[in-house]
View 1 (spheres, helix red, strand yellow):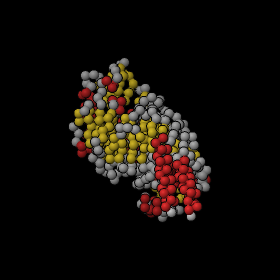
View 2 (spheres, one colour):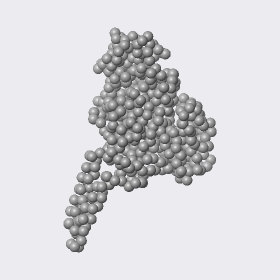
View 3 (cartoon, rainbow, N blue to C red):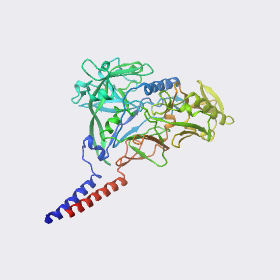
Length: 515
């Protein structure tokens, strides 16, 4: 055996070196289960649902947010944990609801491909719900055209070679969704029915099929990849979902539930238990949304409220110019109907009445000698002759864990055109119609947000979202937010891979020398 020892040592070194080199080159088309180790990235470009120059009334913004909040409060879905790789969603759009005096709303949608052969669907991104559902070819009362300038598509289950049904006896149906007999169709398909607070709704049945995506494996290596998922096939829609002016092919839920695509992919090691976003607030807007952790200095974290289906935080107090407002902290406590939700799908920010009135009074009092207050369309506005940064105070939202969210004037004010030669700025916060405080895009913009689901916490810090960000899960990547992302494996991760591979080589050498 001593004759073969040098050959075995050489073999050990060769194996270790080959493992080290996998950090530099990946197979052209990996399986979905191998993606986590390869540090893959999937690209799903997001598009804005409404042009920046499309006029909308404030009542429409409120109505849109009410629909959104109804889905948050009443939408269905289960719960789950996760594990995994990196997914990047380039973002288009702006968080400013009023650009050049024109009111706009922030609906984002992306394209997904389902089935074999794949069919492309435009689906709205929704962090307040869990389910990915698309319109079925058998759908009744569903729109066939869209005012968004997109072609609507219908999922044709018989036409997909990989489509499968979820039966009522399937463990997914019986345990996750707690299906009753009334939710089973005559042909034993696992059904769903969601009724939203605005009166709209959708119903249909769950299916399994192939989810297609582009996996970025290195600096210039892109591979077509896929994974089977469970999703909803809508056979009936009602209310606002039937309107053609804002119609899309479905909703892409990014919530915490078990049926969320995030949970499904992460449970198989395809995506990580963390996602991040950075929404650009000025200029042409844009930003980045990543299933992975954005790494920037200065992030502060606050724990998520446990046993809640949404991204709830414990808001403790609000300060204006460093002075805490006289608000009873009990109004922010989380219950079945109360609490503070972080929601990228909401345009404005909504404060409970007990917090909204003191906030508005404090802002008005602090600028009473500098600006001219005016009521416009029922909103508190101010006529300003110079930069709002020179006149209006900073605001702090103070959360559990010692984390504060610092808001600049442009984070709670929006520009509403001009009046009598002066610039008119209005309060971008609304009085919550329910008992929940909801933090929308107006305050979330120009900040990196990290949703660390493994540690059950959310972190944030101010950031210029037009700049590149570094994202790390198993390998760091530089993501440029203009156009398609530029992705590069970081030097740190290459060195780490090489270091651990050399440790493996040393271990194998010692093992064979002792045998």
